[in-house]
Image (cartoon, rainbow, N blue to C red; front, top):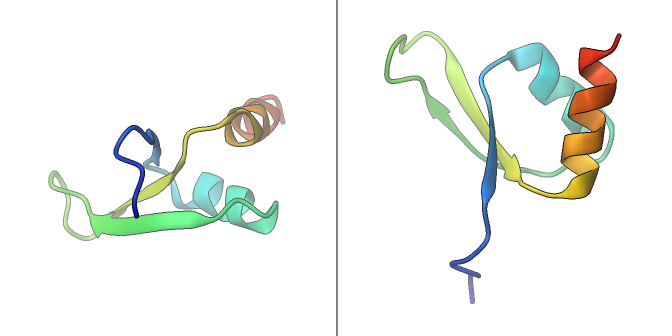
Length: 60
């Protein structure tokens, strides 16, 4: 049964999504962007691990 209180962390950049997946974060869902159908939106679980890796990626 899916937890309805579970939040998503939304990523708009393919490079960041790839970095998260390379660091063992599970991709929940991918959808085409509503603004630009040639791009994608990536959804991850919103948790401390994802947020920490995003900070690490941003500080590179």
